[in-house]
Length: 334
Image (cartoon, rainbow, N blue to C red):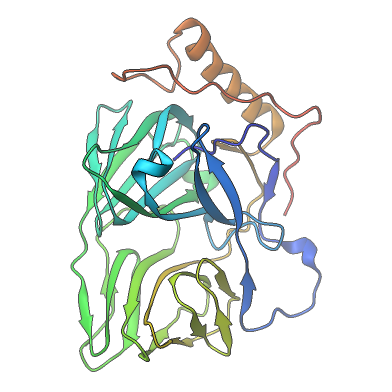
């Protein structure tokens, strides 16, 4: 998914080291902001990363949560060809279907419970369009920043279908990394066979009404629990639907407690990223000049059809032009 804001803010991301030496509480709750995607009937997404409160969770640097949207009212998802650098896109659906096309030659469907992982690396372009048969569209779009030693890898694509694991009163699907759950039905860590370039966790956890599940956490990770259906309690905090609960490193377990209507959450985690990055529009770089160069290359393709690192692919429509850069230099910090 593209960031379709007309004037995307500079997002200076990193280890959030400028927050002072005060110890973080066990759980903090981050409310989303709404961002329209597209034209007059724009589909609204709820963005919890990056926000003023937190820019990253591990290498997770972008989290959009959308739906359930009635496609004949919102127009669904129509995102023309657009570029990415220095990141991986993680597409995960609850309901509906999206067609993905990209400049590596991949044409794939995004379906509920199936991971589509695209690595941008040096540069890639892709489109995302909900299918004509989709009536309700509901899911999350996530980005992962690539670390310095991997950010210039060749672009690529992986499709992975995790085997859902049934719990006594719920179900879990791990689509990145590994997760341990205290449950009689689970004998060991649940692992995903997917390539990641830094230590990561991504999973969907669904709970029956009143269910309590204890997640065993890697204490070197920081974690985020994005609530799709709720409210749920994450540790001592009640977290409303669409909010994100942040857990600082050092915690070894957390209880997730569903209310009377049950709950569904996306569990994210990773070791604190610790690098300074600049994220602007759909690019991740390390300084202003790098991002400006990527924008210039993309615009050369949009305006002149130039051969650029972003490649091209068949699409019935025009690519998405980049918005203007802000009038000040983009600043990395963290």
